[in-house]
Image 1 (cartoon, rainbow, N blue to C red):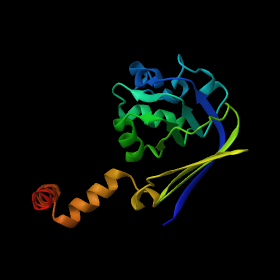
Image 2: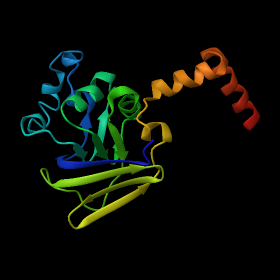
Image 3: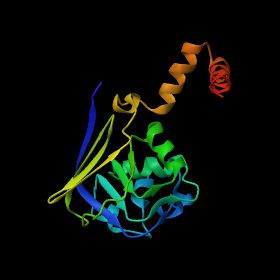
Image 4: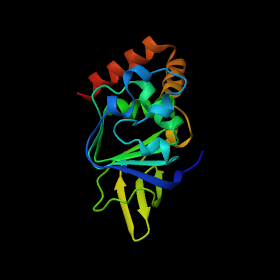
Length: 181
């Protein structure tokens, strides 16, 4: 198990909010060439000039209902990390659950320019975004299972099997919640 995940490469920066349908239009969900349509109408340079391992939005990212194909298409287009002041919780869940796309809800004092080489490091205690002359760190790191390269689905299956099945796991969680009250 690694104690950190480090991503380095060119950044692509989108000003403002980005709705999930602008990331990948619903008509492209499940299409074999979905990655080619990522941000096609909102920021066509993302695919045309890519790959960009670090995708940064200066506003809210994934507004609406980001279905699993959205995260998968971003990853297939070359993104390995998404950074924005706010990221739709469902997009975060889908990104960790099989898309191998890391997300960081953060707003640094300054933003890099598109094409600048940046590095993003995730560890158990927080995340760091750096580029020449700038470095920002935020608390709230990735859980150990994510650092180990597992998806949330794999973790949930393993926990359910260890508890004797999904129903047993759910009952154990209910009992723990009751005991905590």
